[in-house]
Amino acid sequence: MHLFMNRNFKLMFMGRVISNIGDSLYAVAAMWLVSELGGSTFYTGLAGFLTLIPRFMQFFSGPLIDRISIRFLLMNTQLIQAVLLTIIPLASYLGMLNVVLVLILSPLISVFNIIIYPAQMSALPRLVDKKDLLFAKSNP
Image (cartoon, rainbow, N blue to C red):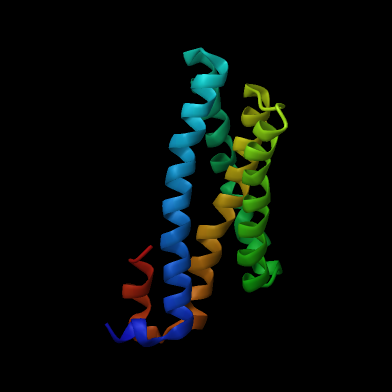
């Protein structure tokens, strides 16, 4: 467990745990919101489909990760996701929340989410010793 003595690894690990919890809560809440706003299983299925589309383009994330600073990428993708997520309660407060808005935001949020995991895996060799790399990669 000396790996958790590494400050940078510990920060990234905790950030990933918190991010995973948030992503999971968002996935459930977004589907529930689409179901409530749309009133139809069609919209719920469409939301699920639209959220999966970015995964088919995940192979583009590798070249992007190679060209941009990992730290910049990780911080900004999380920031952009936070801004996109803030639109939903703001739209609700302003009385402008509708199923179309959620259907547009869900795949956009997913686009930034598919960049985060490969970027973290790419950062690990820079954060931990080679002997700890296998254990580091097996954690969230």
